Length: 499
Image (cartoon, rainbow, N blue to C red; front, side, top):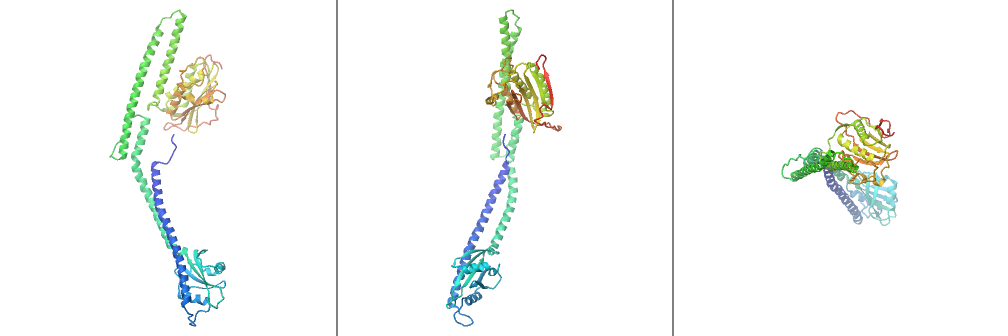
């Protein structure tokens, strides 16, 4: 049985959405990373440029109050910050002897000059390398430029700050717009691909539905061929395959009918002549006549079983209908009494009606009963029962015989395989066909047949089928598997049987 999985339509739509998601996500995140990298490069270039401007200013500028060269680093930085304005979302700070002195005018994202921890960090920075700083306003790119003026012993530094995350706002807003538009496009593409996939796969669904009808009824169904595309070619190929299968089944059916006629005719003729023979006091001739009649009867059963086994693969092998499990088990038990002097028991009969082929199930159960009789002796117990549990029907035949060895429990249902010798008076065909027929009938009902050890010893042969209830059927109470002996129970004794 195939495991349930996603439909082809769902897989097509899923792969389509996955590809579209990748097509939208990769450029969006790629552009964001490129923008961020480019912005970092620009910030580094900006900081280096501001440092170069400070050096040029220090070489050429004069104190605006005295007209002489600057005598202190603090005055130099104050004049520089007055003349040069930083770029947007950037700021200049001066740190003198470990204290924040001044900052460039204008609004700033965060007053980092008021944070003693940051000021102390800038005061102890010993080189001019550009570094990163985490602040309340996000990532900040900063550089420290020491300022030395002849005659000034104060530790003066210019701190250049660029608030990188603030400068990324526009790029991030654009990325969010791309993602939002991409999600809308994914929804539209998903709906469109679902509709398109449905139209493309419609002919394939028609092929599947036609195949289901064929498996349940006959081989006369054909697919309509429209157009000249690949789907039309598939439908035409499928129709040709059905034609070949129909011819093959027709030839097989004709062959089986002819073989059945040819085999049954000589058996019937021989049996009729032997039965018409006058009684003869010669005991040898009477024994020969009795032996021949028995062998002809056995040969007739073998022919019937082989023909039934050959028909098991035909679509019309089953004719399902509403069947009472109670009537099925009781009728089989009544018929089984004629097969041998056994203690016949009916146990745990399920009071329910299900859809199955009553005739085929009766054949399967009679085969199991015949097998049980052939492997038990007079006075042994043979039990027949049924149970409805968890949506399954279990019908079984158990006996108190020698049982089946573990290594034989799988192979015993194969054609012509015999696990062990039978007792005298065996009623089966004797060539290992009966249990193979049981397996074919169970599989035709989408079920299984297996053998297990009976609770009291011996073997229990079980036919496990899905419980398909007829339409408008009343609800049935499923029986607990531990309710053995609490359902309908009775003991049927054939006249003269031991108890």
